[in-house]
Image 1: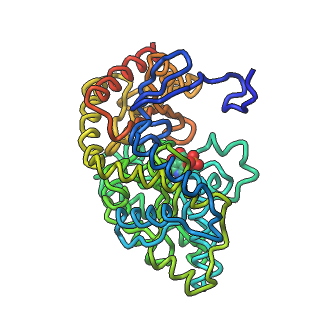
Image 2 (image 1 turned 90 degrees about the vertical axis):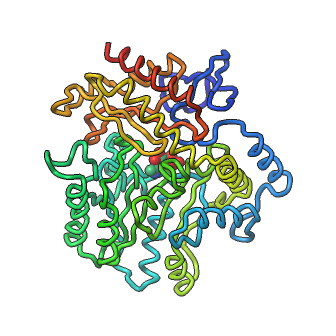
Image 3 (image 1 turned 60 degrees about the vertical axis):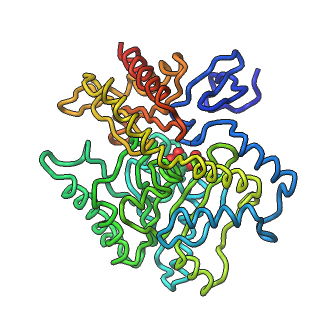
Length: 440
Ligand code: PLP
């Protein structure tokens, strides 16, 4: 009998006892190839001896010191590494313990930044439907993930959301990607004007959408237009890169490929690669200056923020990425994954779309390819594919509600950046088998 309050109240998941490279090993010695790095977390694989040594060394030197009283070498070095890797004027990093905490802190940072700039009425954070920003109440209130929101709806602040930029489902027939991207971005201007620009603090969006719709890459020009609109109305741009940042799509920040320099970016999963929990809010110098020239302090904080051991682990993970040239590898192996998935699945009668960037990829399942119509949600197709894959020793991140929060099924793939060609091929083969078994 388990005393752990598991995710399911009805079952206890298999006991993981070890991990090795790209595999998780359960108590029966069964090995699972991790095609999604958990939830797009394990980016350098498991058990890297360099990270193990860095963590052990840090614990021996300094396990914990309260961030209100001290900084630490690992926090300082990691912040410097992140700002250098991010470029684009990023100058300060606020360390927290998870993606949700990073989004909470980013929202509050934007709000207080507006106060510091003598714009105290600016408090609304506009976000997008079909987004996921975390499960804490503030982040959940901005998320467009209907199933995650439903039980807490009365506790969530009123939300203000615009449509996502999701061309597979929302572009008009014949509309060019650029025209669609501009049209999708204009929704932000309309919403700012509806709310009154004097009330809007920030716009929050995942640069590449992860969990809710599955690796949705923005249309060309979309974020540039979004950034122009934010600038015109004094609205801060927050890119949530908890999933797509830290080289998951190639560059350190996914938004750099969109040609925009947000005011604030959130990071988490690939930052620490799963070795220890860590999240970060990265901001431009101007944002920090507003605090320095204003009240002097961000009214926020957590006991474990900037934890020296978590920072040491993340610093070493980022060093491994540089040392092993994994950012370049993301692009190469991402191209291999794209080819392997298209080879096995592009003619499949129930695969509607194969999409993504770098090593953040998804396969969307449809009942009818012509109409891009989803399966009946009652079928729970994504969950069935996930279970079939797991039964075959492959771990994927299956999600439903892809289209509008209720309808649609996809399988998200986010393997480690160090994945090899043979493993990529195995992922595509076993996923194909799992899809056929779930549909059969
Ligand atoms: N933001 C995005 C884009 C995410 O994908 C997630 C998690 O999937 C979060 C925030 C929340 O992160 P965490 O689960 O670490 O709290």
